[in-house]
Image 1 (cartoon, rainbow, N blue to C red):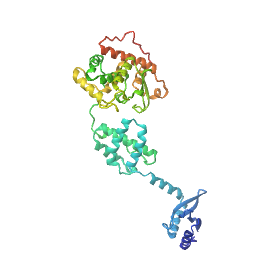
Image 2 (tube, rainbow, N blue to C red):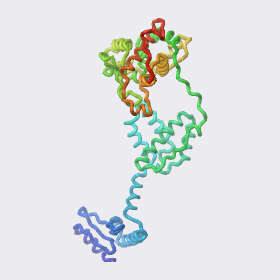
Image 3 (cartoon, helix red, strand yellow):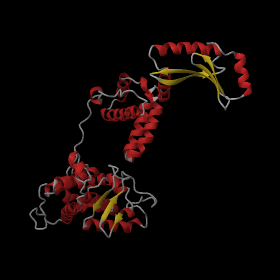
Image 4 (cartoon, rainbow, N blue to C red):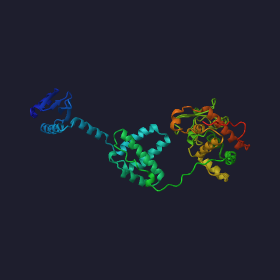
Length: 408
C-alpha cells in the first residue's frame, strides 16, 4: 500500500503519457490518452476480474481514494459486488423521472397507437387534469393516496374513469421502461370514489314507422345533409368516417368505399360494399362537391370537410320540425341499422362486420374472412327497406327479394 505520491501523479499528468500505476492492494491510478486521470479499484469477485471506478483525480485526492478503496474492499469481503452495485444505482438514477417527463414519453408512443379522437381526449386528461396536480412528483413517489386525491378532485365519475385509465396507462408504460416499479392505480375505481353518474342514455332504434316519417322529410334540412344521413343509415358507418371521407376513398366502378385506418376508430382500414341506391347517393354528392377532394366539403370553403357537429345539428332541426318522432343522434343511426339487420334475418357475425365491430374472442382471432359478399347482400337488403320507407311503399318481410340468412 501507499506506493504513490501526489508529486508523482502531478508529474505524470504534466507529461500526458497514458499510464496505469498501482498504489497497492488493487487501487490503481490511470491516465487515459485523452488526459483523464482517475482512480480504479481492481478486485476479484466470484473468480472473475472486476473494476470499480472510484472517481477522477484531483476531485478524488490520493488520500480520499485510499479511504474509499478501503471501504469498498470491506464490502467485497462481505460478499458485495461493488462495481455491479454502482451500475445498478446509476441505472436507478437514469430511470428516475418526474411524472410529467414520463407522461410526455408515453404520449409520444400513444400518438402512434390510438385513434386521433382518442389520443386528443387522453392528451387533454393528462395535460389538463393529471399533470397540474401530480406532474412534478417523481414517478416512484406517486402513491395510491395521490391517485385517490386526483380522482376526488375530478368529481364526475365518467371523466374520473377516463383520467384513471390515462394515469394507469402512463404507469404501465413506465414499468416497461423501468421508470416505475409499480402501478399505484391498481385496485382503485372511480365508482368507489365519485358520486353515481346519471343513467347513460340508451342507444335508440328508429322504428319502421318512424323511418317512414323521417326519410321523406330529410330534404327539409338540405340536400347534402339528407344524402349524408341516408348514407350513414345504409352503410352503418360512424359519423366521423363519412365526414372525413375523400373521393379517392370511393371506388364508384367497384361500388366500394375504403375507410383508411387514420379515419377508423379501430385503427384498421375497412372496405364497405355500397348498395346500388347508396352508390347513387354518392354520385349526387359528387356533383355538389364542386371538385373538392372531400365527399362532404365545408359550405364555407371546399378546402376542408364539414364540421363533425353538422349532421347532428341537422337531425336536431329535423326532429323539431317533425314533432312526433323521438329525438335521435347520428350514432343512433348505427344502432338503428344494427337492429333492423337482425330483424331482416342477417347472421350476427355478418351484422357485426357491417358495423366494423371487433368480433372478439376466438372468432376475432381465427376468422379472417371479410364477409364482403355477405355484407353486400345484407346492406342491399337493408337499403331496400330504407327506400321503401322513403317512398311510402309497403314493405313485407316475406317478400321474395328477402334472403333469409342461415345460422352460423
